Length: 79
View 1 (cartoon, rainbow, N blue to C red):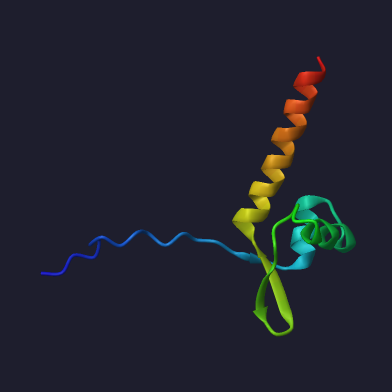
View 2: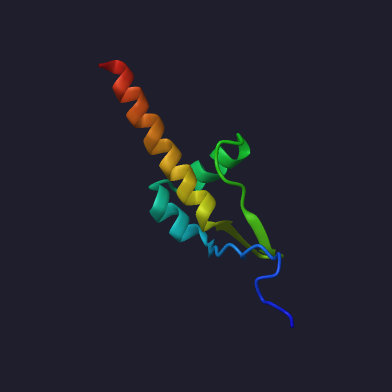
């Protein structure tokens, strides 16, 4: 008998976001996103096809949360 749950980790679900969605989620425009990527301060895009790039949704959302946490920490330090 073969069990489905046999030592296989569950597959993490993620979506690939195109540029307009990334701009919407971050509040940044293309030039700022690509500058941050160049400086290794933003999620690197994934080459989906030769003419299509996208960003993993989970990594973009984590970047946003990290920025919020850093802003809250900085505001707490200023008090």
